[in-house]
Length: 315
Figure 1 (tube, rainbow, N blue to C red):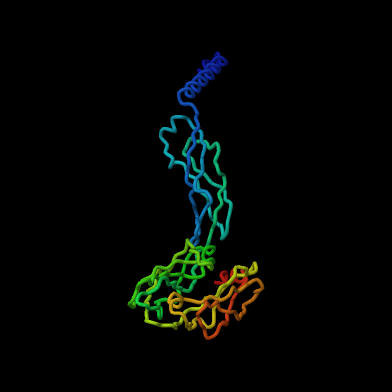
Figure 2: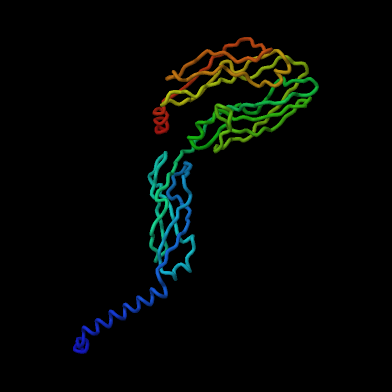
């Protein structure tokens, strides 16, 4: 038996090699290697709780190679791309995109190979509720007072967006009204320039307001709003701002007073503020309007970014 296998061994080996070569040739001819490209969404794994995750690109293009027969039975969903956030902390990170391919597929290229991930902590803070009235009531009436159910509300969102919000504002039209009325007013988050800030949650989203009208009134009490410039030195964070007094009585032209809901202070520069302080500033008072005192005190509380980080760590 052994002699049978040894007999003509070189010829038999050559025949085997030729047979294998023919098989490979036939298989490649009938089921050749081909290439294709799939666009795959980039997923997130091991995302930390209590953070908002965003990325600069949402999809990756995968160029793959495999025998033609495999492509007929594969779906785009069979290909996966993801980034792993295990151990990633707050901030912006450039992370490698990982891929998972079906059996038998070879990755030729992927684009992009990295993605920029923004990991932003979700927090809450309290902001004042401010109401803006517009229009003129009917029957020569003016707004005597505005009563609101909430003076402050809580907002929630990513820290980078949360820090831009200075107040929650509601808009009320009184044009043509000649009787007292109540209304539920939707609120929006705004920055220090009264521009809407999106991406935060308001808790609650509305405030109940009662508008009291009076005929021929030439006096009313309105809020005082400090106007801060955006020039706080780097490394510091504005913690809180309070004005004393918070409200003031104005008198004068009823047509002007009817549309007034607050008086603003002159611009307050923070360029030289490196510790909590108070400043005496003037109010901006329209013509034909009188106030008992044109000066108010603004209390400005700041802290360093390092202290804020240390306080969060201690919590």
